[in-house]
Amino acid sequence: MGAATTDFFEELSSRGHEPLLETTSGTIRVDLMKNGRQHERWLLSIDKGDVDVSHKRGAADCTVRAPEELFDGIATGKVNALAALLRGEMFVDGDSRLLVRFQRLFPTPPRKPARRSTKAARGRKR
Image (cartoon, rainbow, N blue to C red; front, side, top):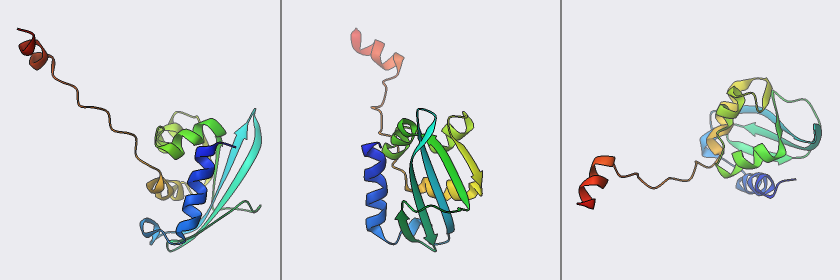
């Protein structure tokens, strides 16, 4: 299992209550795939911001299936979960609104340094 994914879920579990999910209740199961087969499972139970993370089996309101490497990218902020879904790189069954809410917890992508405009760069060469 990817270290970034494990770190993400363990850190989420240690929070207990997540203010960004105070209006959310439901269960999300994340099935991580490796070599086309289920490799690891995470189950999140959310009750108005109170989050419980486990590896339990069971039905969920929303099920996310993604390759392990892709989810590592999501967990580090390098990949946007909804963009990956739209590209067909991961799949969601059930209440996809829970994924939209869950995405609030993922880190944002690292900021890129601001690019200088071409005009400004040309002016400095003179």
